Amino acid sequence: MKTKHTLFIFLCIFGLISFQGQSQTITSFTKSNSAIASNAIYSIDIDSSNVVWIATDNGISSLNGDVFTNFDLSDNLAGLYSYGLDFEYGTGIANIWCGSKSGITKLDVDDLSTGIYTVANSDLLSDTIYASHVAANGLKLFGTPKGLCTFDNTNWDAIQIAGTLGEPTDLKTKTIKNIYAKSDGFIYMATSGGIARVTKTIDGFTRASTVYSPFNGIQSNNTTAVYVDAKDKRWYGTVAGLTSQIGADPKSGFGVYTTSTSNIPHNYVTSLLGDSSYNMWVGTRGGIAKYDGVNWQTWNTALGLPNDTVTSIAMDADKNVWVGTRGGLAKLNIHTATNKLLADDHFSVFPNPAGSFIEIALPETKTNSIYIYNINGTLIKRIELNSSASHQKNLRLTLDDYSNGIYWLKLQTDLGIYAKKFAVIK
Image (cartoon, one colour):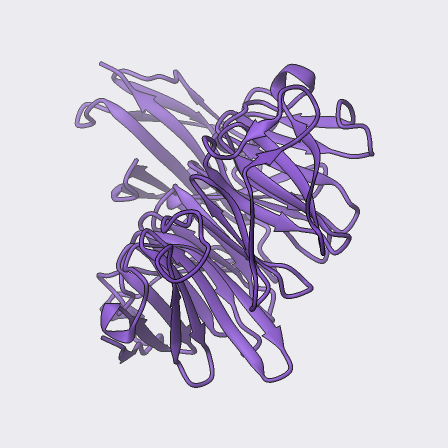
């Protein structure tokens, strides 16, 4: 049932969570502090009115200012378990297209009327839709377990084989997880069998190259996300790292980003988004990161995310980054967000893994507070440093009361928030 709920954001003391460093703010929305339909978010997008739309495992939510509106089966959704979500704009048109386990929902943003497309009433290959994308020319693209389906508001089309480089990708057996359509007609798909690329013409589909790990630097054939930035660099997310590619040769021009070769927070990449400043935003199972071509900047539960498993990223008209996770929604104010999850050259934790204690080599800047969180983001310990202790070089903490597991250490300094992960093994 469609329901509206007003969330008074200024009443932070009653539950809305805001993490503020010297130069950033993360606001989290979860079932415990808001009226969002579910904490399990699979896709988010933002319409021309700056309304945030959220696909969850319990229907669709929208957030307009401080008001949540929820849509479920009583609002004629195809299914509650909602996956990919994208917008269609045009003259007199403002529609949401959202895939689910039970077909596709078209939701008119203006009058909130809906239409449903399933195998029973269309030429869809499957009712399970993992990815939805609306191309610049208005063509709707849907990823299914049996291939790619397209819809031009009149006709349906489908392709189940893609690629001519090496063994063609059989889309009938490869799950399509993410879709990105360029304005030149190329359609990129992240699949469980590599990155597939095709073109759509009036006469149908034309096969094109498929990227495979035996031929190049892609980290895994199990790909999860694809994005083409304004400089025509292709970005491929996989379960084993991030790959970029530049140039026309499908076998060269690759850059590789893993936890062993870069400061990416986790090798399992889940989502990608480029911004107007040529930054690449990377969602992972270890938080969200911004990569400017040289430096990595990371936000995770220790810095305010509701969950480290990021599922979707969107940017609103005010340049705020919205992050969908498996534990709720987050809004990251990036206007002055400069806090970093620093590498070892800024501060260190020893030993790591630890047993009965850790030694913290503090950064050169003044440290005011120390926070320790468990892997679920629960604050375990807070230490306020006095003026003399805040300038010391090393600090020793005993771990007698800590059980085995992963923890986050957060330092609040005069320059912002720094964080690092450590393990306790006794």
